[in-house]
Image (cartoon, rainbow, N blue to C red; front, side):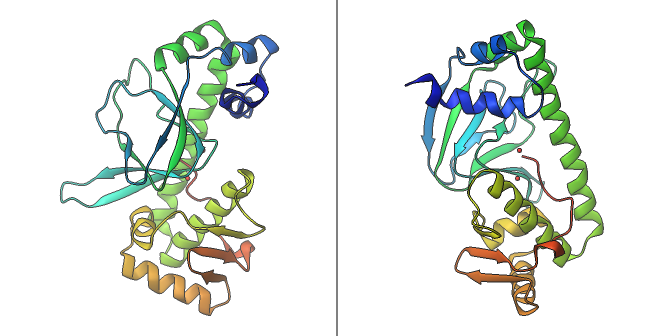
Length: 237
């Protein structure tokens, strides 16, 4: 594959969003022993407690990260869109804290953590980029706690739709303010702390108010300025 089209080039551009890289840094990233893989909907990309999973770079499709409560309920804590990095870990915290699953067919790049760690040790700029990536994720997680704790159902669903719209637009997957939702109503409920019935009623109410328009899985924000910020960005970059 020509270097200009290698998925590692996309990975390099992702890191450059978080720290400036020199030509030597970029060249080093392109030497990583990465492997492409296609995985079907519902398959798990990372298992909770797993300590040998690679770093994943999502090339296409959508994924979600979740935890399971003692009573079996699932809470989705983050969504991933194409261009997101999944499963960064360290020697101090080697085991995955939560499970990551595919929301549909996905294509991803698997990068061994040992190779990535070695690269970060040798290239401070790459280490800074990875560090800043994790800080952005942590900040987004805090924002989502506020959304879950202080917003009503309408605010939670709108925040999720607005954030998905923004991130899909940046990934080239949104047509103006319209996207095909990668989530079922049950999955929206698991992300927002609502039942699927409550999600359905909320979507119907938003449609009746003229805030959104729905056609099957496609949702259009008719009044995108009404979508509150911040929203779920982590594990939805």
